[in-house]
Amino acid sequence: MATALARHIETFRHGVHPDDYKELTHDRPIERLPFMDELVLPLSQHLGSASRPVVSVGEYVYRGQLIAEADGFVSANLHASATGTISAIELRNHPSGRVVDSIVLTPDPVSPQTLYNERSIDFSGLTPSEIVQEIGQGGFVGLGGAAFPTHVKLTAPEGKKVRFFLVNAVECEPYLNSDYRALLERYESIFLGIRVVLKALEAEIAYVGVEMNKLDAIELLKQKMPADLPCEIVPLETKYPQGAEKMLTEAVLDIEIPSGRLPIDVQVIVNNVGTVSGIGEYFQYGQPLVERIVTVTGPGIRRPSNLMVPIGTKLSDVVAYCGGMHENVRQVLFGGPMMGSAQRFLDVPVMKGTSGILFLTDYEVFPREEYPCIKCQRCVDACPVFLNPSRLGSLAKARLYDDMMDWHIMDCMECGSCSYVCPSNIPLVQRFRVAKALLREQKARESKDE
Image (cartoon, rainbow, N blue to C red; front, side, top):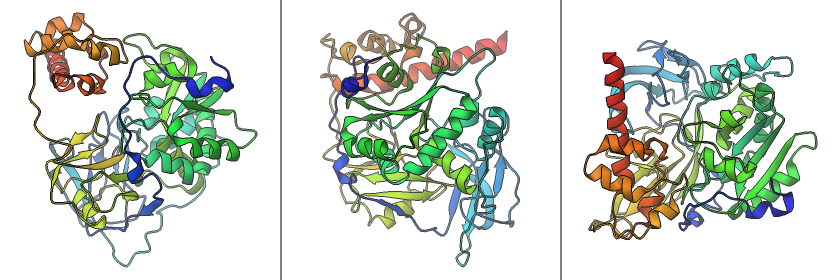
């Protein structure tokens, strides 16, 4: 590992350098979004099985109360993000484009919206497994976008040991500033969350990876960090997709995660800084995951903001609070421009994994003609996992999906670096997503037939 003096040059190999466009909300403090007239809480807003309702229509619930429990190990609890009445449990539009079972909550307009069971949780006397169980009770998932249940990630498989805990504060997606604002305004919760997770993992040390475009946050964390906390702030080169687990591990620890392996296979666990901050607040105040920081930004929104948003708030209500959209909005994304998902409806809710809402106009989004591949190798030079996107793209276009397995298509992170640099405007990552989905479906059918 490089010395601390050389930290500012640490990074991974390959990747791209898109303009970050963070100036729209970079200096805007977090505002608390008011509770709206209706909250929509999908039972499926994390990887794994959807949660199972434990409330009934017409029931009065309190902010932070459990309203749906994890249905299996890879699942997550769901809590009421406001005090109010359960008005429906029905199918509603989901940011994925599907229609899913959702709990509809009507907030009580006269409630003070205090927590259902506000308390601190003393973790000093808890065992690692009890701490992980507590985190599971809080319904925490990865807040960087993947939304993988946190208690599952913190449960090391039999025979595996964790030495290093990496806190992902990179936020390499353009436009987004939710993690950056958490570093500036929630550092006490972050440090407490690191203490909690270090004990849960029985890890030696934590590293907080922060890109160099957040120098003020790096200096603040170094100044405020408790002297007894085994943690180091690691400045990183500003580059995309440095926030990916494999890239962050390579940048911070100079350890390459082999193909088909996970960070735990090299004694590493990675969590988003928003998740760590939420865990800190849970053990300090007893607040489960009922709200999150969301960057609302882009040239298409009238008042770009960093908001603390109750989970389940509808996109239309966020738009109204931020002054509405400009007339030439062409696309609305949940997430950033590289990996975000385009939204079709304005009634979809903010979910646990919604890190940002991006409004792009017809100046940024317009039809581009696709041209033949010119074998320029830009996509190969950009791919952070050393694939050959040009070859994979040709196979996908020819629908030779089985052949794509020989070229390691399942290692693709769908980061979009290849599409970003392609001079022929070939939609490489979109083709890879379709190919991977079809290959998974084929594998599931084969397993079922055996």
